[in-house]
Image (cartoon, rainbow, N blue to C red; front, side, top):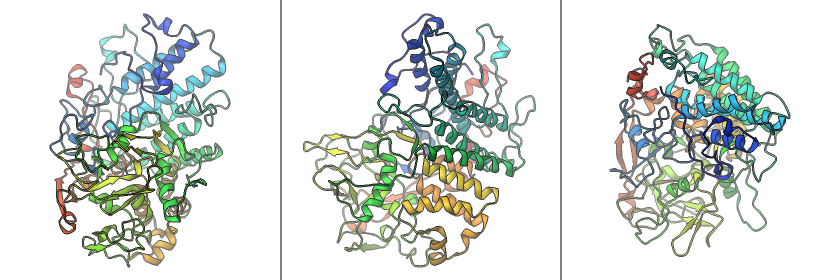
Length: 627
């Protein structure tokens, strides 16, 4: 593993200022202004999770699918689709965040820059002590976060706490991977250091909204610690015997095969600490409140509470957001709403949810469609006609039974043929989505269309403007790396796994209330074929996991959750289906078609391969199992 120094380019807002081309590190830390530039270089090491082409949790799994063949230019990077189709490679890995290739950037380089900052921040003589303490805390967080990001992708990784000196021996450079528990403890301790102190370290919340949005706060550090520890307590890392033989070349084991409930208890405590800090700082579940100029019925208010929890700029639910632009994400998610078969008018609709995602959401009664006693699961693919009471769809339109009597998050997250999309802009408050061949939202050419017939409404800011001449304007929003709903669900999961099957219901029901659903207790008692499911740990585990998959759908969470639960081997070995989007009639279009037979090789595909050339340069480094 080569840890070389280079200056990555910066993107937006305060990240536009980077260190000048200075000949020495002494010059880079000669004064406060130069040191601040280096601070922003450390921020720039964060991966661009706001782009579906560079977020390793989005187009790499089974949430979305794409038409084939995919051409260069259709997307900024084709690497995620290679992973989704089982084409990952140890020779030239896709989305390689170890070395910085295949659509990824080297996070080790970012860690090196963080170490350089921490080693030199005492040099500026005009830097105020309170600023220095805050900057140190920020960089410790960034250093921990980059280690965490690599850990989630690669499993046990080397720990680079300090940069090696330039005169380090060849053997010193040949670092080895550390055991999972050691990596987790290191990252957790570093996050504790970042969050420690009051007044001079990380702020509880950003005060200067004009210049500091996107910088790290104490609740953000505690929330990422909670996510780290929940992941470490999950079956992939806690008592996983599949990796009991995974060792360094000196025989050191890298996975502890013994299950430890204390890891869940530690995760629960960390999650509660993060919730307390976030709520004390004014963070809460987002609720849409229309202004005096806006009209919205109750169903629309619920829909916009769900959508705007993600898309409203710096809303009160956000704990940690990326300032990278979401314009490309929105254009990729939004259907092409022009009749003319233009080659590329900005709206592409390529980010296509799969049919299995449409089936994931609850019925209107708040339970899975497979166990709702009153929902017609057997006839879900039969055509029905929309009536006036089906307010989320277009009256007298035909669509499959699957789209009827579903929970509000289904209609808030997904657009489909016959649905509506409520928008703040344009002449109509609700746009009609009609997606059969050559219809306004449908396929008009061989690219830039939804292969499944579904569109990711959840990620489209309601202020997207469609111009009369075909141009579009998007309102940017910060990508939610962590929001309170996510944290509530992590806490509920950790509590249940710790043996508490009562308290988790409080947090699940807060999420469900925002989504317009009854409590878990009421929904399962009155509508489920398994009415006592929520009263025991195994049943509540299933409920928590499906609640999480629904609430966090399309936010880059599912890919990682399936892995840490060790469910990827079953979920990602099933066929990918969509609708017959190349047809014009209701019966033809609403025919289920096979898009791909997805495969997942266990345990190999649970982690990224390290590029093979690294093992030749450093023979002490071991490859992940199966590669």
